[in-house]
Amino acid sequence: MSYASTNIARVVDQINSSLFLPAIQRPYVWETSQITALFDSLLKGYPISSFLFWELDSSRRGDWEIYKFIDNFRQGGMHNELAETDGRDVTLVLDGQQRLTSLLIGLRGTYTTRKKYARKENPDAWTKQRLYLDLLKSPKSDLEEGEADIGITYGLKFFEHTPRNSSDHLWFKVGSILDCTSDDAYYALVDGIIDKLPSELTRFEKRTIEQNLDRLYRVIWKDDVIAFYTEKDQSLDRVLDIFIRANDGGTKLSKSDLLLSMITSKWKGVSARQEIFDLVDYLNDGLDARNDLSKDFLMKASLVLSDLDVTYKVNNFTNSNLAIIEDNWAKIKKTLEMTLRLVNSLGIDKETLTSTNALMPIAYYLHNVDEGLDGTTSFEARNAVLVQKFLLGSLLNGAFSGTSDQAISISRGLIKESLRSKADFPTADLVSGLARRGRLATFNDDNIHGLFEITYGKRNCFLALSLLYEGQRWGASGYHIDHIIPRSLANREKLMAMNLPEDRIVEILSSVDRLGNLQLLLGRENLEKSDTPFNHWIISRDAAFAERHMIPADQSLWTVEMLPEFVREREKAIKERINAQF
Image 1 (cartoon, rainbow, N blue to C red):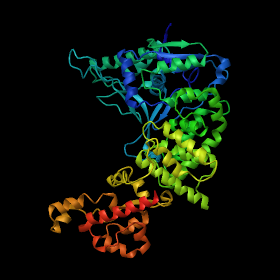
Image 2 (cartoon, rainbow, N blue to C red; image 1 turned 120 degrees about the vertical axis):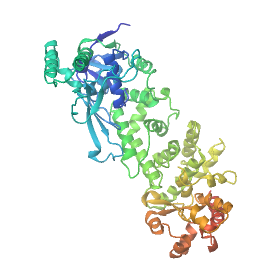
Image 3 (cartoon, helix red, strand yellow; image 1 turned 180 degrees about the vertical axis):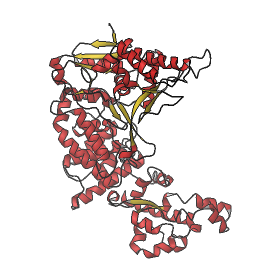
Image 4 (cartoon, rainbow, N blue to C red; image 1 turned 135 degrees about the vertical axis):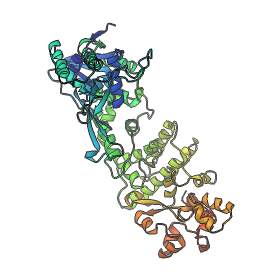
């Protein structure tokens, strides 16, 4: 294996001209601090590791999705653009994307960041910054004699606007060094800077300026610091293997990165990479609620919905399986949107969905009945309740946590078998089938006590409260989790003012956030209730309200002093309702 070398100016000139990225590369993820550290290492003469390129034969350009490097990066989920490579010699970067992109941004591009605490939707929250070098800062000025050059010692920093110079700082835009295409041009640059310096600068300061400029010029134009190996074999399998091994020592390849690369290289009808990225973005940010799905979820769901082996491994993405997924892709996208819309309508989103794998059986059912259950027919309403019951039982009991391939496979088989004779969602069959494999998706006397350990503020608190309101579409109504006996009344100072003994105060304080003191209210109702004592507010509600929220009939319990007894009575009612439902 023979390596070649070149300088930074030459390789930056080749980026997006002959150097591009294959679809198997991950998105750019470096922070500005990593970019400045890279340039600091170069100025110090440190090695920055080698690069791995793949020279693509012109006849193979159509086999790959080829992408541009990002030169103007925006923080927070930016994707590379497709490249037009007709008539170009193409070399793909297999290892070194993060470093080359950082060199491009530092020399020719910008890095846009969001101001601290600012909303990303606000256009004024973003600042487009460029890299500058403080020529007056000696890299050794902060070091004690004999101390090693540890940390970033060159004066490198990103700025939105050209920074103001002073007696302590002389800022130079790093990318300006690219104008020095010859030694004469470089010397003219140096002379121009020196001539404009104030007369009071010391000889040491002028020497520091000259040394910093010289070091930057040499590292960009003179020193062959880019060592690279170019692979010329056109075998996809060989290139994928090289890529995986080359990336093994850095940021680990996720399974989705590898599988996405395989799909992208073999799908013919659509751009798989763009389809996956667009669908993830749409499901997470384009629906009525926010979700938190990953590429891995989408690709595993493709196996599940295509009736393939659900195990998420490379061997299951064979050419024949990829062809099946591609043929089903339009329906897969429709199914996943239906699934998320249904789940979101129940009030379950990124904040409360504790296991995305629990969505797989629901998606498989919707995929086969081809209905979204978001209408008002008796079939849709009945099955939405069945889905809600199964999903809540699964999430609260962790039925699909850990290694869940078997649970997903079993669920798919049970749904397939059930649909041969009836169209309803088979909640009962799923619950009993999963229970035989030690996976609980329901509640009984053995596990219902765990619900009452869920308290206000926990991620699964909404899920537990949802059990009490069968068929309620909380996602469309804007719910609040409300303390029935207001939290503000269960205050130590107020309780002490009632002359309650300490042990009673402790008992009240430990009861206020328990499930028995919580209910789901429409946002409007909760604002009306506010901190009003419950025994005053409840008289404005009808009898149906008390029954729906399982308020104990004994009005003597409706005060903060009686909160522990109120919680115990209400937990009994909750247990009875859940036992009746499950």
